[in-house]
Image (cartoon, rainbow, N blue to C red; front, side):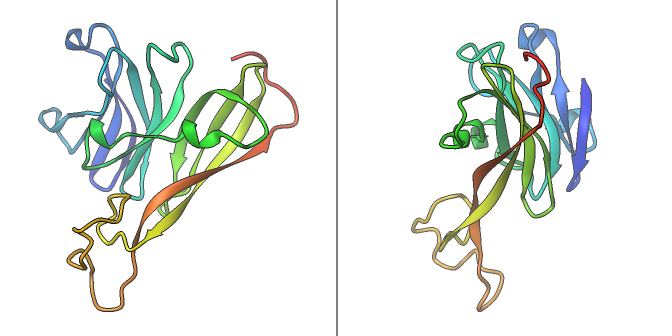
Length: 178
């Protein structure tokens, strides 16, 4: 196993065991091996946690449909594998078609930074900036009946779930093929 991140009482990284058929699985711990939570998505893919912040873990996945290419993802710290959200899917409409991506860091206010790579091998620095969904008081990324105010911390408190919008900053020279 390898730990690559820590924060909010969690450690994050990846594990390779015979139980995972020779594949790396992203995971979270809370101080002991017994607390391990497997974040790998369903199927024979691989996954890695690169950082922890703002109640989330960020990293990348490799699945049979994109292997050997990686895709940037984000998980909530308490939601397990089912909480995974593709950040790679948010890279559309930026003027390039990205074949690979990785979420490498997340700040305490939810800003995620990483790398995206075109099929021609051009590397781009990318930033996913959170936006909020008005009325989503329990921060589960949707407005629903449960958002009746029971999740509010006090009268007049405003809250909203994070959704991420991507932007790119090109690097001046290509770094070669990925």
